[in-house]
Structure formats: structure tokens, C-alpha cells
Length: 230
Image (cartoon, rainbow, N blue to C red):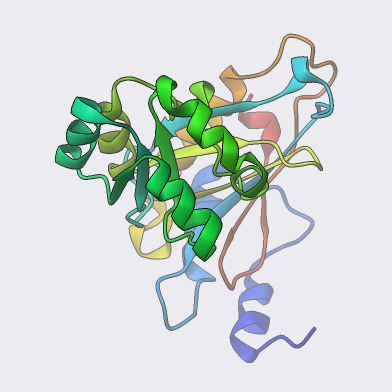
């Protein structure tokens, strides 16, 4: 894989054998973000659980103190007064079967988060095969299946993110932009890690936090000392 000069310069700043403290890692991730655009900073957390077992799932949502630096487009499935409530709260798209038809017929995915009222889940269920693989299926655990659509939309717009395990037992989450600076990134990171640690399943045995790595879009991975987090 070809790596540019900026990446190679960034790699030199990172000691791959070292486990960094949070503040040091966030300072380093901003120093190594050298692209011409404002890079997204992501955290990758490998957990000592087995996502194939229902009692070892780790999933939830949290509003980051400083948001993500990205405005999420929200699609809400609701009708009547709840549809009006969603529009007033700032939802980008609101509908019922018309939205199902648009997604199925036009392969339309111009949204980042899907919220639905419980009575609309029968309709949304028809999209399970297309929304599921993209991680877009609404869920009560993530607060995206709710009657309080106003609160859900406002939280998402304020920087609420969902965290969930992938098939390799890793959680991938954005915690902001490189332009946030080390302090704000650290605060967002602490909020996310606090939620993940709190969500530890009782069925999980042994070491829970296996590895924690932070990286900007184009920058190298920086390992964080997970022993100091739990």
C-alpha cells in the first residue's frame, strides 16, 4: 500500500511499542493529522467478549460533550402528531411507507441515523435486510425506537453517537475532529469509554478492554494504555 510523505512523517512521531496516556495520545493524534481537510478522529476498542452470544453484546448510545463535529442527517418514521414533532425538532426526513418505497425503489440512503416510533416498527421491519447490514436499524437500546422523537432527534443533532460491537468484537466510534484539540477530544473519549466500561456484560470473563487505539482519518494508529481506563 502506497503511503505519502505526510503519513510517513506522522508515523515517525508515534512509538508503536508504547501505550500512551489519554491526554498524550490525543495531543499526538492532532499532531499527526496532516491532511488538507479536517480529519475525523476515531477510537477502536477491542473487547474481551464474544459478540455471537446475546448475553455478551455491548451496544448503547451517548451524547458526546463536544459533539462529533459532523451534523448527522436524521430520518424519522412517524405519523400524525409525532411526525410533526420530529419535523419541529429538526429531523431531515419524516415519513411512513413513502420512505420505505424510496429506500427500496431508489436505493436511497441520504441519512446517517434512523429513528422510529414503536408503532412504526412493523413498517421499518421491511427494511431490515438493507438497514441492518449498514448499522442503521433503529433499536430501543440505542434510543432510536422511542415515542419521544423530539428528544431523540435533538440528541442526535447535538452529537449523540451509537457504539456497538462488530463481528470481530471491536467497537469503532468517532470522537470528533482533529481541529477540536487534545482537551476536547480527551473529554469526548473519556465519556465514550466510561459508557463502554459501564456496559460491560455480566457474562464477560477475563480482561474486558483488550486494546484501545485512536487514529485520525489519514494518520497512524496510537495505542492507549487500557489498564488505566478500567
